[in-house]
Length: 432
Image (cartoon, rainbow, N blue to C red):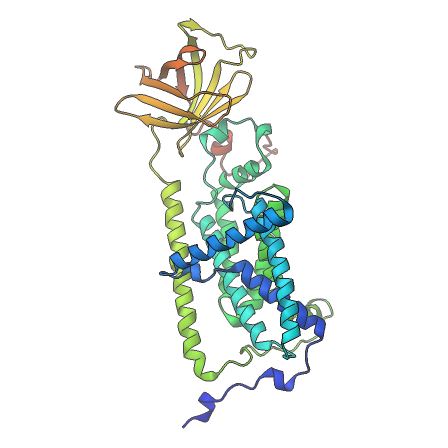
């Protein structure tokens, strides 16, 4: 019998001095907080656990709503959506902090353990996979550009100064596919080393660099992923922390530094096969989830063009048969409109105000049903036709009378943002 194959690796608890009490308390609080914050990962990626994770999430959300009402007097009605910086999210972070603090105190009072080497290694593994999966998901959404699509017709028609900071960022990224792919490749490059124990430091350093930029973009351009991205950066820094002294000695003090033992503390040799099987399952789950999200994003971004999609200039605008001249003082006259690829319609009026609708185009009936996204505008039901010279004509009743709008479609590449292209040689800066 090969005793070496079954003998446990000696525990560091028996040979190393105890952790200071402050370190023990800090670790216990951090352990509880980080696991709860990232939960239900990885259960939410494993087929068959969907209903269980939904029930857990619903129960947790009910608890957060209760805390918001009792502690802050806030009735939380908006759950996390495209924004990860909702009132709910801030109350959740507060709740996690209190729960973790209490759990850390109780753990300290009831535990006789002087070190937590095995739990530290397990937490390190957990954070590696949380970071790797997140970076792979966001990275692949850029490598195969789905997160930042080409600016929509509405965005191209919008005056620059009306853009929100987040809108500027999305336009900046979406107008350059090459840069978007580069940014995504950096995230993927950081994620891959995190999947392996021996290259964790490399992955964490790359992740910290990438995520620092992401956090600053979110903060400076008001992107509502500030809480989540900051937590991810914190995780990367925690993975770097055990090697901080070695990095300082090598990079700053110019000293030789010792290598670290890569094997996790307290892991039995006979469990190596189990660990490899678990890792393989995790890799497969990550691959399936990333592939599913990427395919879904591609289907959305590359869906067939919507009927009438594009930007149109108003050539003639009639109300009850009377032509309305293009005067900037006429706040009711349309100047330009854009049918977006996602089904929206934006109308720019002469005074630069904007009306927004969800448009349903019925090609067989030659009709357009417009459901308003403005509180001060009614729904519209219009008919349309394309004249012999290629112009679009919209007709129908409004609250101001019956309108007839003749429109000329702009070429798709008529906007400088899309047609400027790349130039190696610029005799003068082309800054417009």
